[in-house]
Length: 80
Image (tube, rainbow, N blue to C red; front, top):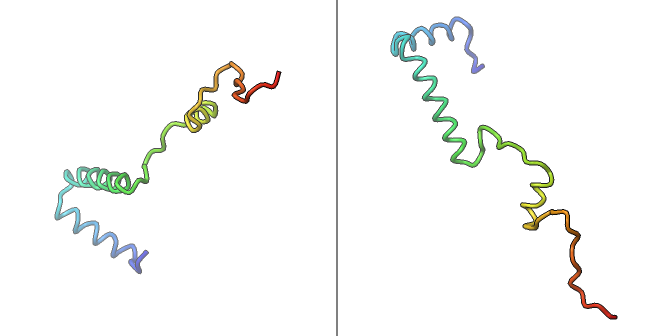
C-alpha cells in the first residue's frame, strides 16, 4: 500500500492522534463518511440501492399501462 511499512503507518496514526485528539477522531470519520456518501449521490451512484419492486409493478410502471385482470380490448375495426 503506497510502499508504506507497518511502522510508518503506526507513526502516521500516532501523529494524527496527537493532532486531532482521541475524542475528535470518531467525529472526523463520520463526517468523512457522510462527505463520501454525498459525493457519490451527487454523481448519481446511490450508496444504498432502492428496494426492488415486484416484476408486475415494474412492468406496469415501465409501460404506463395497468396490468389488471381484464383482457385487452381490440381497437381494430370488425368486418361483420
